Length: 193
Length: 410
Image (cartoon, rainbow over all chains, first blue to last red; front, side, top):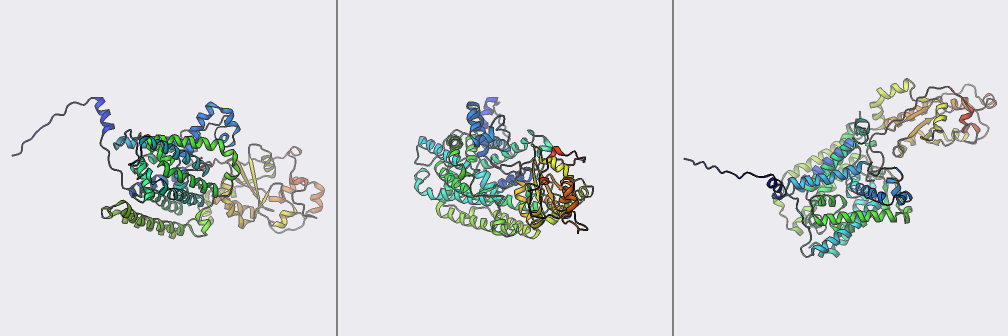
């Protein structure tokens, strides 16, 4: 004989549901090779349909230029590099890479939400105070931003996209990024270990 | 043949076409997040050999996309000419890459991953992203001091197959073998430095590796379409345009277009050097037929308002050149009707035409004799359009470029 037990769950309010979305347990990340194959399919899809690869720093650049153009348009018009994006009546947002960048943020957020990884926290090495981590992140970001524009693309726009279509410059760039990071890794090991 | 990449702007309109990019970006961000790229510790661990997720995901993505791209191009679905290949500026790329390497290990992200990290509310990701904004701002303010360097060592669309002088399939196969070797080595490093248990790694990864190698061998066997293959695929439509004389433009139309400020006209003169030195239209570039294929990548970099006009003494060689341009997807290409001989008939002064005309010339050779090789220093090398009223049927229609409109990560 089996006994059937029924449990009644208390009715959930809208607020509970909303909270449960954010507070759900974090799912593990997918296997790196699987992520690699999926990313490869996205990259191929982008090239196949649009002829362009992926990008991020270009989009950040153009969003920044919108702000600069609002504050000091005359300066934009006098700086050749900035004028090419927003000189005169040119709309800096009128570029595919801006939309890839916006989509990137929405996609990352959606995945975080669905997979329970949306939480305010600071990821850092075990022996690094939170504030040091913030400062280092900002400094690292500044180097990244500067280098990415100097190299005409970041890890996505140069290494991934250019690498897949066999650009010599992109492969040289990729080795430079990894070379630079590995060369310095030993000296900043306290930041991460 | 070669229906991809799609002409999105034509199909959907200017702004709506960006929705496709929004979708591409969404998938990109989603995949980066599920791969763990929002966690700076996971990214930094790459550089201490503890967790080589970055290497596996990046190279996994590159080789997957690469095999698919060249398979699609090999079977005639995708036009590699229309795909954006990052132009090579060697030294700015290398120096920029080294600076980025510093940023990577100090900050723990790259620009794209920091945005994903910020999107899932990681504070270090947000600070990094702010840093990226600041770095890009600094670049915009300082580029004026070293612009010359920024534009230096430019090599254009320069690919590994050009550099190594190997067929694309072989390059693809080599890269896949190197990547598989790196994955294998990476796993050994993870075992040594990160105490990873390799027995728990999924077995399907061997299958995936095998599929990649098979794919690369398929790329080698199928090969990439040659110019002749590409012309065969186009012959029905483009051959008809040629036969209906839709692409042979009257000298008067060429002159008019040369003086149209909204256009850039590139004239390619495919005659012998001797003929070119005797006479050519001002600003025409001499390109021997066999050198033309090497020029194709440069022609693709020209802006969308460019008109390409090929010319020979009559039309035979120019038609061959035109076929090469069309087969290699160069847009807005035309032939000078009747070639240089017809140009001279229309524009050279009567005295010259009467005295210099040769009797019985072979096909596609110069019909006038020139006493000296003055090149473009004749009046009729650049006639004044206001001096002529010529009747002709205009044929030029600019084609909107398919694919990227110049500027990868720009």
